[in-house]
Image (tube, rainbow, N blue to C red; front, side, top):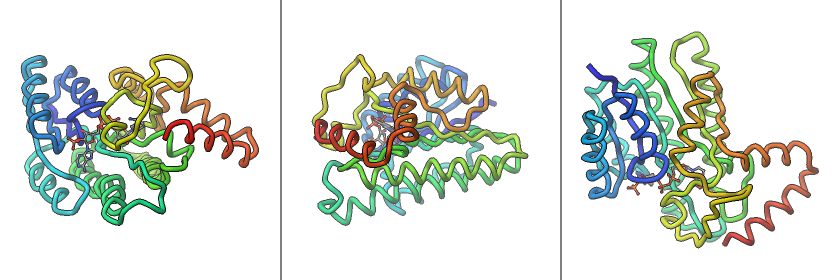
Length: 259
Ligand SMILES: NC(=O)c1ccc[n+]([C@@H]2O[C@H](COP(=O)([O-])OP(=O)(O)OC[C@H]3O[C@@H](n4cnc5c(N)ncnc54)[C@H](OP(=O)(O)O)[C@@H]3O)[C@@H](O)[C@H]2O)c1
């Protein structure tokens, strides 16, 4: 019997790249998303290309009902790999974010990650085997104007995963948090952000397949916090070396250019 990888948010971008990676490694997949036509087309492509079985669960994971649907949908599956990838950004300044969006982003990027992880982890512990990969962001290290809630939830994911790693140190369960910089995906369009996707330079938009390749290399050598890309490494160095107020100035001027 093939192992199963569950990837949330595999309609596009990084989640789809993870789906391809695990299918290539011979895993059957469970993939989730809200865009039904796209996720179903992805499933057919993955099945035909990699000769694996793909189950799709069409669900909005930014609320309790959606999370419950997912949990019932995976009740009978033995999950070997969980990739908590589904996520979205918000464009407005914090003071202008509507209550519904506050609830949705915090639910998806905290509650869903936590509850789904605990659910899957319990069966992994019985087998003493499995891998949990959580997708954070460079925003976890550098919160920006118009990105306050998003980055705060991504910092939560970073902290949550490092804590989990320590709790599981004596088990055979592997835990990793991936903190990418810009990804060439549907993310910015979905959030209504108008960005020029640079393909070169320090702040380039990276190909999702490349990010997965680098993160899998880190996973293999046991690196818990994966920083796939030069930008996120430079941000960390700047944050360590620069006086805090100078760091804020740089981030603010960068955020103003983005809008
Ligand atoms: N793009 C970047 O620059 C960047 C940088 C750092 C980290 N990240 C993180 O990387 C991850 C993947 O993002 P991406 O860049 O690949 O963007 P993407 O192409 O927009 O993919 C996001 C995925 O999450 C799913 N999703 C979003 N909201 C959802 C909801 N309410 N319920 C269920 N699924 C939902 C989307 O599916 P549906 O739309 O079909 O529901 C889609 O499959 C996210 O966690 C994101 O925060 C992105």
